[in-house]
Length: 239
Image 1 (spheres, rainbow, N blue to C red):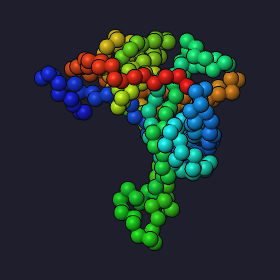
Image 2: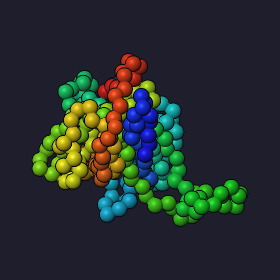
Image 3: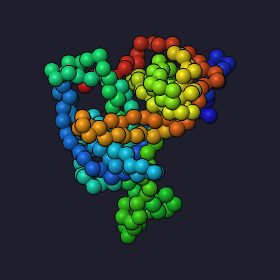
Image 4: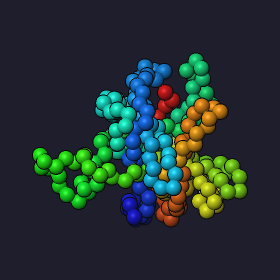
């Protein structure tokens, strides 16, 4: 376990908010937020199992400058995090609704499969040409439960507060069947860990693709330790 010892107790789950996706770029676009902050959106198709998913990552700052150099059709590895942001109305003003963005922290060309096993530093052997590594689609989130929304008997959404460097992110985790049963027992302040993937659904009538973090496995921290809020961590704002 990722174990932190505080005050003689072991908090089994260190706060995490990690996304990792490997696949092929199918869409790339640059833009600006309502506050004039430049960004780059990149959508990836990833086929890591019985279904294909199309997660969209948004890159800011130095990561955006790097992301802008990639092209449609490139095979890439993206790492990032999820963050709930307030939706904006037609006048770019915050509303009471939220959307979950996938924020890209890094992006790089996907290496060939042999690079897992060999140090390909020779001028005659590229790290990138050759057989591609398999697609990946993974999400790992640990943090404190804010609230749980029960949709039906087999579906629930858990909102978790995660600490990441100097920021705090609220993340929605979709739970089905067995994971939903656990989700319904959670209360605010519980600390959980959830591992799963990013799932996307094409809402054709609304002309948009909805993306969710779906838990494949989830557990309750048996020894949570409450942290003091020193005021230095801030939650990310709406764009």
